[in-house]
Amino acid sequence: MDRITFARSLRQAQTPAEAKLWKALRNGQLDGLKFRRQHDISLYVVDFACEALKLVVELDGGVHRDEAQVVKDLHRQQDLEQMGWAVLRFENAQVTGRMGEVLEAIRAYARGVRG
Image 1 (cartoon, rainbow, N blue to C red):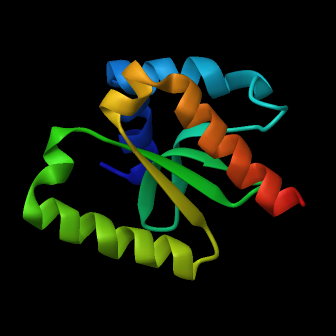
Image 2: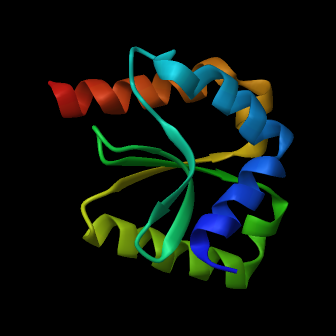
């Protein structure tokens, strides 16, 4: 399966946390920032990306606590950062329980970039 088909399948099978965050980010609802979900960047499909900020937002569920997955996520993040992208990571529980804090962290990052 190519990355575009894979990204489409991820969009159709999003987690509850991804659906909740997407509802807050879509259509420029967060300060006019345009985000894409399950966006293809080089070798990776990231959860959310704002090209204007070169920002990736990743949501981590329980599988991301596995030691091998932690190492894989770190390498992936380093690759994205070497390509000029910043990566913000949030636990699914943060999105479902403290959405305001997640959105404020994204806004704070955007303010830092925009000046």
